[in-house]
Image (tube, rainbow, N blue to C red; front, side, top):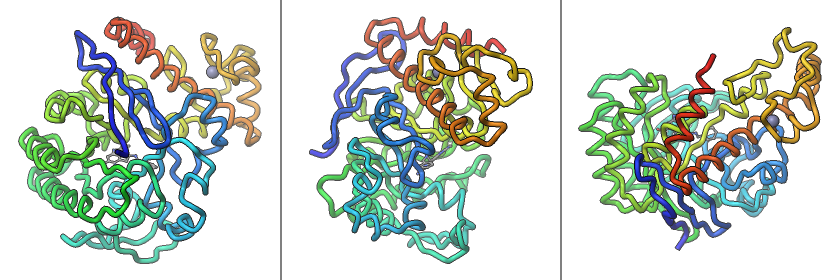
Length: 370
Ligand SMILES: CNc1nc2c(CCNCc3ccccc3)c3nc(N)[nH]c(=O)c3cc2[nH]1
Ligand SMILES: [Zn+2]
């Protein structure tokens, strides 16, 4: 068995659950936030630092690694784990989303997608079979099906076509599998249309995947629309399988997603905003590069006990960032990753202790203060 899921505790008043994702490279406590390692690195962090902060399952990307350095090179290196020095489990996204969002799209056909590389403009073809071959060369523990994520907004017809193609491609991905040591998760599409989401979930559940991605969200729709779609989509998925809300999210979205029964999340936000000098605090975001912090000798977040907050001040970190010193964005990244991992630890503890709803209300009261 490659990946299995155990539910430890289900919250009595919300859809939240605390669980364990069992993988061949170790167990992962859920709800889990997966830091994004787009180009085989969680930017500015060593694998040891990601692990020490609490990272257990990281995300990488088929599209990026296929283009550079190439799937065959990574296969020759012994696979992605050895190539990047990460011994824990890795989940790879199929590239479906990146081809549609990053590459200059050429043509979508039933067979697959022609696109131009965002790196050098060279022309490439991706299909469900190709996406599976690349993910098997990378050797990730969890591969995502090659899907078509409809943009937001889009017409009902566009959402229906993308959803139906995603279902057909999910079957092709499942049939293209060769590795026994890699799990394949299907991805539910259907835009913001309940009937399309129901059909998508039905198609994918019939294929009996070990876990399910919820795609097509966090693509520009208002947050309350995303929450509404989750309200009716999560219950369509098997209770005993993990649900992965793709591309989400900020602390408030993590809490709202957990409350609706989501187990897995990934988002570039914590690491991306860190690189432009913005950090998470209990009271919301803080843009430490702003002039107001030039003589502020407090830690980024007085309530945080991360390495950055225990040793450095806002004034020092602001100076480093203004001076383009690499240490600056390393320190903000350490803090943001600690913040999100600590949030997920607190969420899981609250579910186990039966006070998740109180924790969520209290956290959001501070988070939305300004
Ligand atoms: C940000 N909002 C959002 N992200 C979505 C993604 C990508 C998730 N993040 C993967 C990643 C991997 C490495 C580097 C960077 C990102 C999706 N992926 C797929 N396959 N399908 C989706 O519908 C889909 C929808 C999304 N919405
Ligand atoms: Zn901190």
